[in-house]
Image (tube, rainbow, N blue to C red):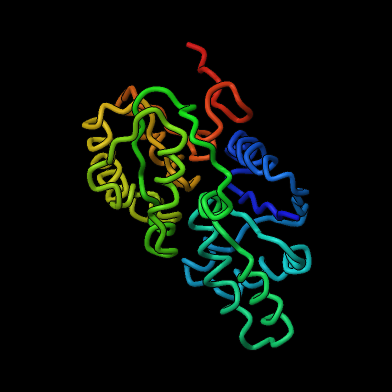
Length: 247
């Protein structure tokens, strides 16, 4: 059985991404479990110094996440939180710590899971030119840059490397609220690099980056469209593919 940890941003703001993720995971033939008790991974609390609050948020989810099989997360930041930070929040509570460790060992990011299990066929489903933005937590927190690119090479007609792809887009959770001027400048630099690629699609593996970059693309009236990597992998016309905006 596969447990899907869809994340709160996907559930509340980008439900179409969840549809694409579910479509991809159905190809495994495994039962997909989506616990109703899943809310937030606690990262916003943790990053702002509220470790106890983060622990309280996650404590309510531990029972639902217990079990066997992988816990798949379509977000580098949330995956990092569940895999690397979760156990550290319960070191003074042995029973909960044991649960948290077992859960964290089953957590895996979406593209890592797809590559590990050889679930991507070499079909060029995404037309045009595609470029990829490395999200901070996936790249630096999980040390992952290969799996997303392998996924895109399998599924895209043409992939071009984004200059300074490892530079932050300026989202950073509450960073963009606390430091809006700096965040805006970082975003402008990211959009400038995207425009240089002349890509039809800019792909990211973190919902926060998608919200941030999408706002920059619209502001600059850029022709590139943002996709979550799950949407890029399912291709046009499949579940979760973005609907055309009415003008």
